Length: 303
Image 1 (tube, rainbow, N blue to C red):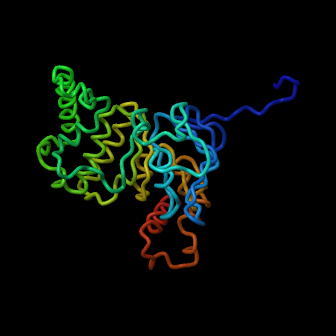
Image 2: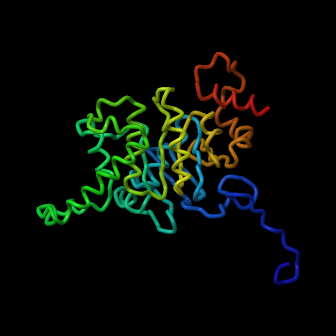
């Protein structure tokens, strides 16, 4: 009952969200909130997100067809690009005009579709670079070994422990350039953990990964959640999305067009339209678009 005596409709709360699943739906405990974020390149609007919230402590998949603006949105959230307008917060703190290195220090770490491992450094040295607030980074302190040596030993011990978890300990003295594509993905994810992040953002973690390493990567992503981290990832593998995601956000032409439980989103008409588009009247069996095939298979599975 409201203050003026009129009946009120109770707010529906289900798991991660409040109210019915829809673009921009309010989350119970959001870790990221973005409003009016827009990015244009010339006459092309790459991102035009009115409102979106990312739930804390969950694995959220950001999906959509090629050119939907997913990676651009990632770049905006993490300080690797600047929007034309809009505001967004991470853990209650504004990220507007915050450079990428400071965003990382705040606990928001991202990986890239094309891995950023430094090939001419060893796997172990790549890991050490991921540690934050290193005493030796200060010019004055760097010439006084007693100020940084203990921390250096602790960083190396932590790096080796994480490499063991990722089954990369046997490669720790190898140059990163010698790793396979999948191993580089594992290294980048492992290096992200060196900074004890609150939110890990993964840009197409399965791209170019040998099937033999796919399950290992999936297990590690699930492990991030079990350790209390929030995960937001971009992915085209719809079977993977349905397997590990708690929540799905769909982008098309720069906008959020759907949100919800993975199983429900896969059968949402807006999602089907976003993926199939002009293919509606085509013979999907003759299409070369692997994403269309994946979506069709999932739609068929749901039916």
